[in-house]
Length: 313
Figure 1 (cartoon, one colour):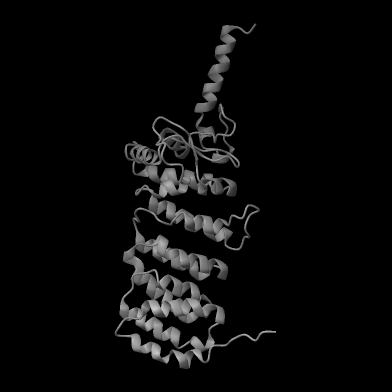
Figure 2 (cartoon, helix red, strand yellow; figure 1 turned 90 degrees about the vertical axis):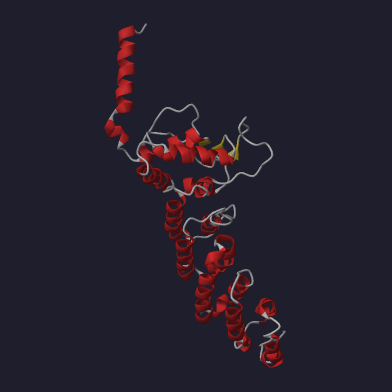
């Protein structure tokens, strides 16, 4: 039989170990702490993990989905309040984001944070919605976190630019950029535009197409004119991007004079376009023509006569 004193001494040592500041300074991934669920990410003093859990979201290990136990809006409100009311605010925001960066250094953990959370039935959760956002998407919906989260995402993209799709068909670059689509509010749209255009300039061609066509779903109306000018320069430099760029021009709110300039530029290159690209080019020209500029299309025959048609075998 174990004596009471011996048992108390053992418990005291466990308490000292948990409170030891040396333990707290160890890297996030190497700390250990008792957990009832082996699939649950251990807190280990991390502000990031603790605030997520108290707000209603539990991080899971491996390929297990992160679990959201409350309504998504309730989670965002609780986390926002927890950050704002924290004794070290606003420094706690930096600490929280640093915890996220450390946690997502592991590619599996990053992937899990980019995929939808598992929705748990809870008295606070709305039963009408079955779609659940990813953790990253939820964090992007909190204004005080959004700029830092966006910065982190763009820092993550380069390491996956030249990787192939995973066995389940997921491309990490596309998955990361998808988080930026259809945000309710963009805190710094000018910075987001600059980062997107910089990414497009260095991405491989197949991803350039995807990133360009994603722009209307990511950027606010206030940035359409700036994006249009950037894409015009890209169009003049790289004709292989003609189709995605013109496709985007049809979805942006652009000045008619600017569209006329682009239309003349495109019509001047009709003799060198590929036949398979012609439908998108014609669609753009028709979309951008007004009553005043409709006379320009009379010159189509002379341009289309020079379009190269591939020979059939």
